[in-house]
Length: 593
Ligand code: SAT
Ligand code: MN
Image 1 (cartoon, rainbow, N blue to C red):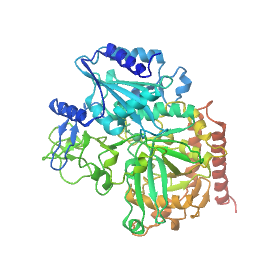
Image 2: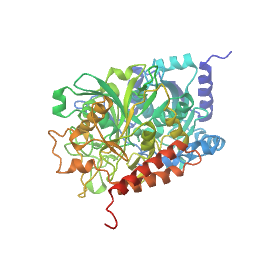
Image 3: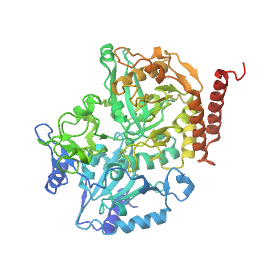
Image 4: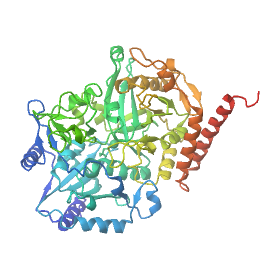
């Protein structure tokens, strides 16, 4: 009988025959290996060494200027039945998709080395973790995967033991946007990505495996693969609560995950631990709670805006052993982006900086760094059983209407709140920025199957024996009439998390409204905070007329998922709509006195 590993060997051979690399390199994850790769990339200009005095072992990578973000219009979910991919995905028939992308792969690695990267998503001994193998012709991808996943010999050993892995084939091709596809075959556990070297398109362990393929597997196997950070918060009583929070790309997940408590909170003994900043896999444990791991081992964060004021932990972890992509450069070879002190000498394309050409760093410039370099990193991130989740938080960029925080009535309402999420678009994906779009659970670009089935899967957790987390919604991005943010955000967000934790512990009261439970303004501690007069009241008001429109829009959006939209969600939308209508009727001025 063929050994389990031979399935991998066979596939590697097959790919090599098709792509015709000059050499094949199996990555072991060793220091020697990365050192050799780095020197080669420095030699050919793929990496530029940064100032070794200020940033030892740090490098700058300048991507092709047309390859700076995820490309959703070229990203496909290729299921046998079109319906299974849902209206939330671009779909192509699997046979056609294979044929089209295989044609691009033919001979594409001639003159290049083909790297075989065995990796594990999650702590190497965790039953919640899953393995994959990425084949790529990009040494930059290898260097990034080495930080973002548990890559190399240990992962290969697990794959050998289990005989199971997700197959990911990647080539930068010609970096031609006309010859670019990111294809997913969830039924085969396969990913094929051609023509881009950018993070989410090329580091296949991340969005392609850990979200699109994993969400599909999670549904079959009864767990959840979510676009969520995981943060641990220890209160002064010494109890640590883990919170999982879903926000769209570039909406502050990394900042929230690495939050530093305001001084008064620090003095009282509050402490924040970072488990993950982007992806969360969770499943019910023997005690009925949801237990979560961060499948990643590093951070691929947005650089612009990261500063000593917004995220000191991130800044501290970026002083050594990091890769920067599309940031600007100071005259003395330090990485630079908007939000940092100092002045850039060169923009992200290496041209002398000219403000007339726009920002110096690309708005989606990124850093890649091992999670262990973060000062708030916790060894709990390596716990094979994961961490228990006390609360799930949804949020987006909503300049108006949506309050600073509210809590869902129950799980079913929480699923509706997540399904109704909306946010203004950001530079993390190609296309217009600042346009409001529905982004349920921040999974619009990442759910590997029909949203209707996805919501049904979420609802299926509402069953006897499970002790589900409370569900909240936050909005750090509410603006006043003057266009300025009403809430300071960043470290001050702990004030809102404190209310959530007190709710979880059964200590905080709440005001019941048609959209859920809200804190009274007095329940949010604002000591030491310089809020505009009346700002907190505005942040916590429920504009019933606005919400009547919002819940109607939610209903219309959900209706597009029929007939796969679960009836329970339809009922829940109707329940909230009726509650809003009743509250409006009760508060309305009598028409004739
Ligand atoms: O480019 S990634 O998808 O890896 C980052 C993001 O957009 O969240
Ligand atoms: Mn993300």
